[in-house]
Amino acid sequence: MECFKIAIIGAGVVGSAIARELSKFDIKTVLIEKEHDVSLGASKANSGIVHGGYAGKSGTLKGELCIRGNQMFEALNSALNFGYRRTGAYMLAFSERDFEVIQHQIQNGVKVGESGYALLDEKKLKERLPHVSDQAIGALYIPTVGVTSPYEFTIALAENAIENGVTLKLDFEVDKIHKDKTGCYEITATNSDTLLAEIIINVAGEHSDKIARLFGDESIKLLKRKGQYILFGKDQSYLTDQVIFQLPNDKGKGILVTTTYHGNLMIGPDAEDMRLDVNKDTSVESLEYVIQTARRSIPNINLKRALTTFSGVRSMSETGDFIIRPSEIEGLFHVAGIDSPGLTSSPAIAKYVVEMLKNAGVDLKDKTYFKADRAPLIKSQKQDSKMMCRCEGITEAEIRDCLSRGIPVDTTDAVKRRVRAGMGNCQGAYCRPRVKALLAEALDLPEAQIKTRTETHVAPTRVSIEVIRNLNV
Figure 1 (cartoon, rainbow, N blue to C red):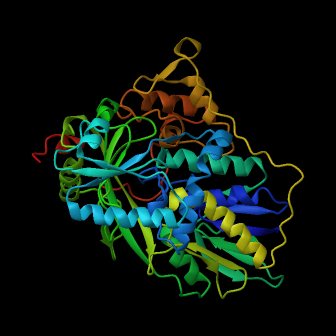
Figure 2: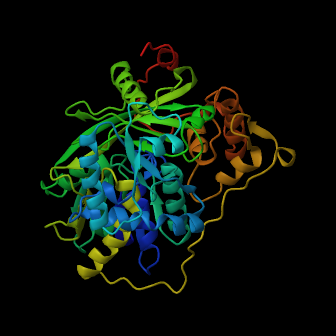
């Protein structure tokens, strides 16, 4: 069996960014993912915010890598066509004391190399955000903040890595690891599939501590924290086309109100520490808190236009900073505890990991040719192709395009994450059976074998959207 030079465990946004960065070098790399697609952990379920310098404390890896990552998004989007828009953000003040906290945020941003902040009084804030709460007496404007689609970004990174020679192994849940006589690590999956690699990069998200323990490394200690969200129809984006924060707290950046890259209003997340039962369920109690807190920023949020709820689990280190370092175990490197601003930092983390490998003596020679660009998905007009999703205006040609880009696409949810068929007001009621029929035809399978969900684990329990629409909060 051939031995890969490097195996990356975890095909979330950070693992996929590392895979793309390593694909620039003449080195055999494999990207391992336990699920049937990339971007199915925290990379799928987060705020999609490209944060500014306030988000990472000066003197920490977060502080260094967040600002560097932010500065890379414009060029990355030009090359990979995943969708990114710089919107700017407002951090609201509700008291004079809040402005003291905001001053600390400005000082931290300046220390990490960011500028352009503007303090707004109540009048200027109202001019810019006419729907903001009357309770807000001012704000900090942060021009460098943007929004992206986190799963589309991850998919683009992984597709480009594959196009440049990285091997992707899906459905490979790591179960056992040991070194063979040649010095390669033999990695065995729960389905008994195996592969060999000299070097392991542990980027397994909330499972990074488990992967470390398979090597006998007990040094990775993670706190799992769940955040719940509500997504609304695009007609609610009139409330804001920018990101609105309240002041950060010890559990994160607080409840935000934002318009997503694709134009839906979104509120959340809360922060619930998970101990034994780590799940992605949503609850009425938590979502009521999200609504009440979000309305402190924007009062006129119309619950009748709620489309869906979801949650994501992010993993924090004991120190609160990213863990990016070699293990004491030879050939093992950790990239763990990547909570917010992990999405923003991901491209900078990838470059940091490459330098870490070089410093550890890994020979990385540039390829003679690296294809930096990824073609955008076809945007076909209705007259050119059969309309499949009326809510989002997605045609058959667009769906067929997303099926031929290096990663297997064989569920309706996988299509949804790539072209948004099923993301609209009817949440797939119209298009899902049509997408299923198209997949069956394209893959030469009976329709009964085409699944909706990509994930293999039991689906989370979500609050009925009718319950949300009728909440009296």
